[in-house]
Image: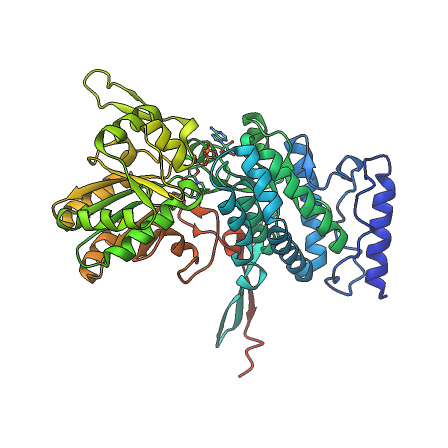
Amino acid sequence: MNETLIRDVVAEVLGRIGGATTTVTASAPAAPAPAAAKSDSCGCSVKKATSAPALRGKYGVFATADEACAAAQEAFLQLQQKGIAARRKIEEIVKTLAEKNAEPWGKIEFEETKIGRLDHKIVKLGLIKLVPGVDWLRPDARSGDHGITLEEYTPFGVVGAITPSTHSIPTLSGNIVNIVAAGNAVVFNAHPSAAKCAAVAVRTYNEAIYRETGIENIACIIEKPTLDSFNALCKNEYVRLLLVTGGPMVVKAAMQTGKRAICAGPGNPPVFVDDTCCPTRAAKAIISGAAFDNNLLCIGEKQVFVLDHVADKLMQRMSENGAVKLNSAQLTQLTKAAFTIKEGQGGGCAQAHTNKDFIGKDPGFLAQAAGINLPAGTQLLFGETDAMHPFVQEEQMMPMIPIVRVKSVEEGIALSLQSEHGYKHTAIIHSHDVENITAMARALDTTLFVKNGPSPAGLGLGGEGYLSFSIATPTGEGITNPRTFTRVRRCVMVDNLRIY
Ligand code: NAD
């Protein structure tokens, strides 16, 4: 044992004794084995985190935002001490536990939220290993006659994060990997309807992280999240940065806090299909993207525009590959159930609001509302609509795709653009014509643009690239990764250390 290791163990044991009145349960992990110490310095000049007893034994799950933030701040300071080795260990723990617990955690999330598909909830948790971690961060260097300069990607401190109901544990897990890889701690305010499962995951992660590194609260969560706890989290002095994953309301709320906010906002991804693509490939891609987790993904295909003379062929291929077409009467019946339509006032347009009971439900549930029975194994419903139909205009998050016939490429691109509502999130094209592809990419100006594949290919699932469940759209950071959560700091050596 070296001196640093002994000091760390002693400090940790004293900290635990200080908190002996708290609720370390019989199932709590054994005493920590600290990760590799950062340096051989005596540590006398290092500001030690305070060991407030109320923060012990909670493993990240706190009643209030202020307690959670204080605990996260303490954990952030501990992580600073324990260095890159501890960050790496935490990344490994989160990725391993997400995969190991994919089935039970997928199940508890599905039971709590009652949206999406259990099989796909399990798949999503198995994907956390594809989220980039510590190795993503590489300093930038400059070398010249005046010496050398290094720009390093350094942590902020505590990040406040808001997660959606559509993928609670996957978003939380991916966010922890990114945020902690960059050297930060994080406090979550989860969606109230997906908060219990999130707390289970946070506790499990922290127990393992504590056991392996001695850091107890690197990822914290407010047990019963509310709008008040959101406000308290945003106001807390330790929170230096916000990461918001959700719809328009929370994005707006985060931007009004005065803190820097990275916002992964809503989408309404259009698909344009021209006459140069392979209709079978396009049909299969549309089905697999739109049916995934019953179309809860923000990147999921939500409406299709197709050139008139290939529309029948595309729909035929969709019917042959697991999708079922609704006729006009069935579609009208489903629309009445799935949306509340308020007539426009003073000559304005009618406003549709999605009925929450239909979000993320199975095709069978929607079919029942449409008045039909489905063959077993149906993945997706589709039906022909006009361009202003609620299924086109609303981010409906249901396994039902509206198909709109268009007369020209120009019309298809223009309607795709209109239906995306300027979210600049995701768009998809099926085409082998580079001019059509380029024209749509330029016009839509989206964060993700997928050609000839299902939407998840844009997140490295069947396409090249890496995964994140938080795609920062209105604020422009793109597919979030560890660098998103860093401050760039420059270190300059004048006239020396250039070795040639
Ligand atoms: P939601 O907006 O209802 O909730 C998201 C989070 O924000 C929740 O934690 C919720 O409690 C909180 N929230 C909502 N309104 C708030 C307010 N006014 N003040 C403070 N907090 C508030 O969204 P949801 O239904 O859980 O998720 C689906 C939405 O999220 C869709 O719009 C989808 O496109 C979007 N989303 C985006 C991404 C992305 O990466 N861009 C990823 C997943 C989901």
